[in-house]
Image (cartoon, rainbow, N blue to C red):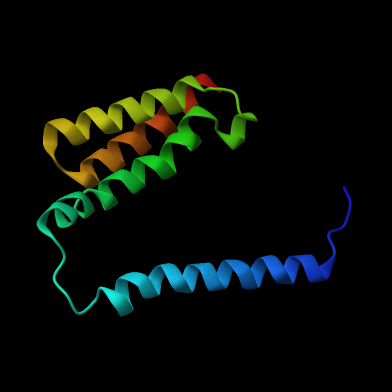
Length: 110
């Protein structure tokens, strides 16, 4: 692998920092003192619900532990966690049941 020029790295870091600042400033500085329209608030309500599956899905489908190969124990744990979450509407029950399923199947299948 070739080394990247330090100037290029710093340009990228500064560019990303400026972009991140401008995105935050748009909502906090420009729109922060005004009420948001109801349609936007309705859509922003689902942001947190969408982020968690977006973070977890790649780890279930293409886990690093198996070098990107789908794994039965991880798929089953995700299915159990989803099912328990839908039935009980309890996040902690879903997390613990998924973790117990994952570790139980890893122990039994390994």
